[in-house]
Image (cartoon, rainbow, N blue to C red; front, side, top):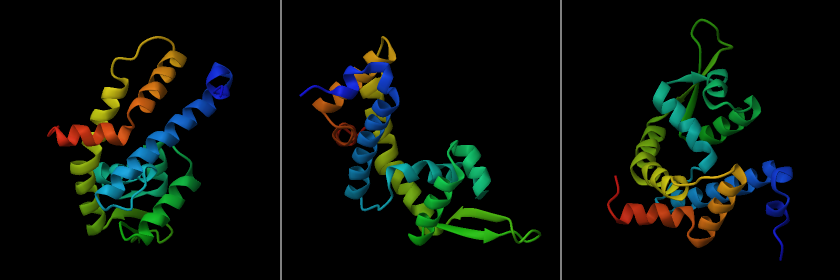
Amino acid sequence: MEDVVRELGYLCLGSRLKRISERLQADVNRLSERVGLDVQAGQYPLLAALDRNGPLTVGGLVGALGVSQPGVTRSVLRLVEMGLLEIERGDEDRRQKTVALTEAGRRAVETSKREIWRHVEAAVVELCGDLSGSVLDQLNAMEDRLGQMSLDRRALRHKERGGG
């Protein structure tokens, strides 16, 4: 069957990017499950921002991630429920809330760095490192390569080879 989104090219660029994003995130989610983490791929940037910057307000997280405030708030609340984040009220301005990693959150980040992030990064470099041509040509090549071997398989292969 014809891939309509692919065939329509630039007209469906947003849909195409979303489709690839969903595929990559599903692959990362499988890796997370393998190492026993219940963290979703879309939550990793938030955890990484807190790991790099220390405690931040929701507004600070929005700025660091470049995503909407409602999306950040949903992710924060989910990660608080999971015990990975805590919300602290400011001493001077009680309305000011700061989000921070809990001890469990710090352990999850360390596990993620060691077992997921570096291997996913290597897999993405393998997937995209030599792409050339128009953005549509590059997306075609990415999807073709993902069809040959998923991102999670690429990351696991990197890990099995002792990749650092």
